[in-house]
Image (spheres, rainbow, N blue to C red):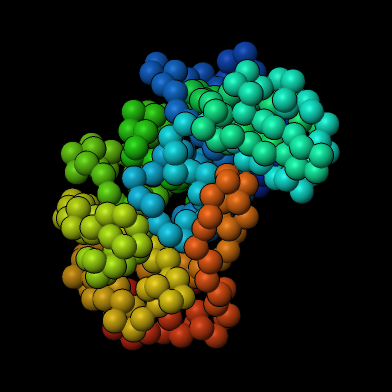
Length: 339
């Protein structure tokens, strides 16, 4: 099969011309899909699968976003990831007041007025019946239960791109370790197929679970949000001792780590914190990069669609972000760049 990769996507046979692809595939096919080993019926709540991702690890990747997070970051750009269960997004601007949702909702969570549609979040059970009949998409269910088998079938559609770019699969969230069985099984299945794996984590997790999962992870994308203990609790809801202890443990184990540092104007953009990021990296042996993640306001509109208020800051300009990168880089030998 020199120069060609044959793979099956759904029921369509696609031939992809690809110079330099290995003559034999590592992945078998059965009945239009991939032949999966045992244990891949484990289920998890997934709220997005982003293909052709370029910012969640090396190469071209597919990022799988899982629901549930132990932190409550004030600036969260994925507020729909916080709860473990499915939930409803509602965009009032798209509503036609047609009444399809009120006729369908089993818990009567929707109420229509002459000019307004309201959702009683206390009544909503996240069943998605209303979203299924909404003609404009103003109602959207976020989070569906999927098996490892189902997720990996979607991930493997782009196997040729992973091989050529050094990419693979990244698990993000939320916090993937909150759904440990699903995360472990998905990573194990991905490694069984030769995929490169990344795991993004806030680090606020059981240390034993991190030890167990570490052999399945090629790169940890490890969030470092705030160096000051009290500020960390004020901004995220938890202290940072466990996060730092887990980071040190992974480093001692020899795991490859990229520090991911969200920088939020008025909260943690002070010089002391930027220098503390550099000092932390200098104390560790296996941090290969530091990524500065500038604040953006994408979470604001999503919070509104969840019926929640949110923190908002000014989006930093490129000059400001460049200065942050330089401030960190001045105190460490580890490469620093904007994410």
